[in-house]
Length: 180
Ligand SMILES: Cc1cc2nc3c(=O)[nH]c(=O)nc-3n(C[C@H](O)[C@H](O)[C@H](O)COP(=O)(O)O)c2cc1C
Image (cartoon, rainbow, N blue to C red):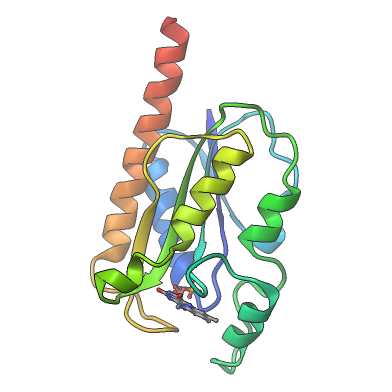
């Protein structure tokens, strides 16, 4: 089994989280990491685990207008300058029912009631399930300290551990299926 980690990131925070997750998944299987604009649009049959993540924009997934707003925050090009996870998942082909998947996202550290309003990781998990994926661990958010970052302390380590747990969960599920 191999894994893909597909991420969207404006300012690079989510890209670092995706790298850390991929590093953790690599404990159990080979991993390829794809920036969403460069990610293949057809899921290859040998990909048994897909992790998908992006930034929380306006309590959900980015849209073209929220990405334009992000571009105005910085003088450098955005990491994900073309499409977002919403568009990529909307056009994804080749999904075999029950393929293992997981969703992650980045959010600003805010009071709990604000976080409850909506988060990219949960929106992605819902979309993955609608497409026929089986989410094997709960969606997870990683914290940034402001609109453009940086990441809160310890979040890369937490992402690596989450990735390692995800790899183990996907592998255990495959082993269970083989026993049936
Ligand atoms: C247009 C826009 C809307 C945002 N809305 C939210 C929000 O609703 N909740 C939140 O926690 N963060 C929000 N943020 C902050 C993002 O969470 C933050 O920019 C992102 O997590 C940083 O990760 P990145 O560098 O990978 O893009 C917003 C950012 C932008 C640009």
